Image 1: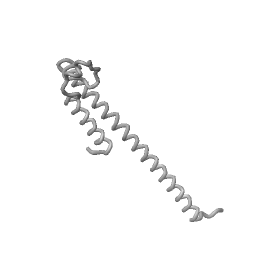
Image 2: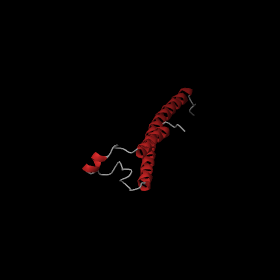
Image 3: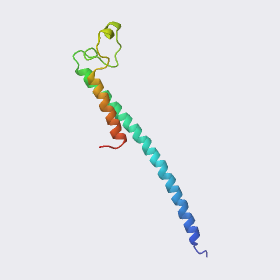
Image 4: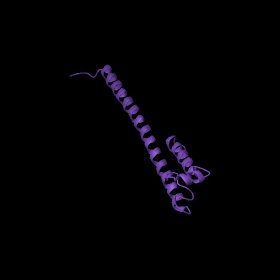
Length: 107
């Protein structure tokens, strides 16, 4: 009958600890990349929804206020005073702040 050796137990325990540490490191890397993807998708969806609401709520959709994604005529491009409307810029800034708050877990 074999007697359990304490050195064998300590070797097995150290191997298990090494495997658990490597698994923990891989899990943390996956969670970090998952946070990046989640923050990107949520903030982009927010900006898209915000811009859609502004576009649909405008007096003439795409004309007043001008859409940042619309194709411009040469005449209307030279007549405009600003190239990016403040409402669309506000949505973009809020989307960026939302990205950072989700990614760095600031709630």
